[in-house]
Amino acid sequence: MAKKRVLITGGCGFLGSHLCDRYLKEGYQVICMDNLLTGSAENIAHLIGNEDFEFIKHDVTNFIYVPGELDLVLHFASPASPIDYLEMPIQTLKVGSLGTHKALGLAKEKNARFLLASTSEVYGDPLKHPQNEDYWGNVNPIGFRGVYDEAKRFAEAMTMGYHRYHNLETRIVRIFNTYGTRMRLKDGRALPTFMRQALKGNPITVFGDGSQTRSFTYVDDLVEGIFRLSQSDEVEPVNIGNPQEVTILEFAKEIIKLTGSKSEIVHEELPDDDPKVRQPDISKAKRVLDWEPTVDRIDGLRKTLAYFKEKVDKSNG
Image (tube, rainbow, N blue to C red; front, side, top):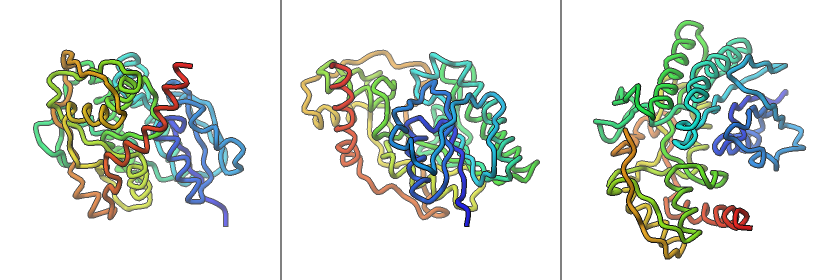
């Protein structure tokens, strides 16, 4: 019996590379596609030479050609951290619109199931807490973060359009803050920034008074949820995240304690439209996927610390 084939766009990224690992483990042939704008070939170096793995360097905002059959398309191509989408606003909008259109077109041509990587950012700076999938969000479409928020909202709308008009099998995952190995040191998000600053003994920068909250999911938990969603019959969006909420100030203190750093915390002005709260309601994931996170935040941080220590040592070397 022929192995199933999956295309993972953005497969050299933090999440995409972990998904390449998972689907190979599940017996799939994996095609990883990335233009390496924010992804790194280093993340998939251990897979080169695997007969069930193929890497294609390609920008998915252009026509996508993949020979042979496909069973599944996972669309994870997109800048995902503030430092990236603020520096590359047009590319972010293009991959959310043109890239999603091209990936959906490929899935339609191959009669493959399509899974879109969406984000908790579709909820914007939420007025409802915690956020469930029925909440429409509170997004500033012309703010600095709007290029990412609206790109993902448009991608969700186009995905549902293909489902309703073309009867394409589609799935949408709304990903909440995730951490783990293969994150970049200069990612711009809280965890790699705090880890880098703490390990170097630099001041840790907390925006505002640090009372804004986030909910951090360890990458293995997220990958498990995405895999289950890809195999499920659920068409409408599903939150995948960890409902264990923490303030950014408390999180910074956790990182200092974990690393044994002498770093001090300094406060800077809160960026425009920075969400004040972020916590997933995962009732739906529990109900339809029988999924919930199993890795405690501190345990996950310990697993991640060794990776960042090595990265910081290399950057200092």
